[in-house]
Length: 77
Image (cartoon, rainbow, N blue to C red):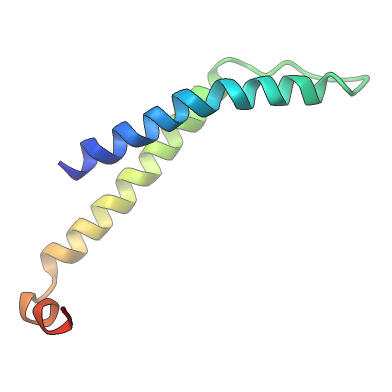
């Protein structure tokens, strides 16, 4: 349940940010005499890497909460 929510948020952010970043970087690189083209797989690879990082983080927090002592959690609340 948590994985789907966070994955959708990251993918939506990637869909919005990737074209903007691609355009900004292309415009910036045009100012140089020797510039390279940005491959199309690079923004997709970045979004996939960020999704993997978010999923690992959520998994770590879920495992930490699942393995914790519920009495200690209730005491701190």
